[in-house]
Image (cartoon, rainbow, N blue to C red):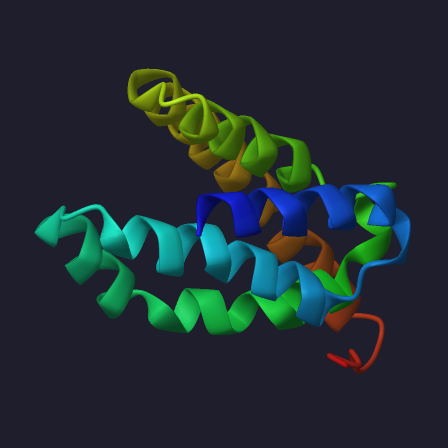
Length: 127
């Protein structure tokens, strides 16, 4: 699974500026649901289950704010996590995941801000 995630991220990185919201959402789910779901951390698994609606909302957020970044910043962040796992550096992967989650929180706030501003200027097309 880790090698598949690595290959998918490598492919996505090669065409980062062309990725759709649906593709970005799938990449997020691979790391945050599929991979982390195998970690044996029952608290994390429960949090993923409780906040599944946030993952569903990502597709809308990505499509509504695709121009916020030239290419999606989470791609190299996810790659850093996966590369640490490929190298069996679990501690490094955990540190990279922590850094990613902090940065992702700031980006999510920026995306929501863009959408809130756009709501004042007319309808938003989520697809």
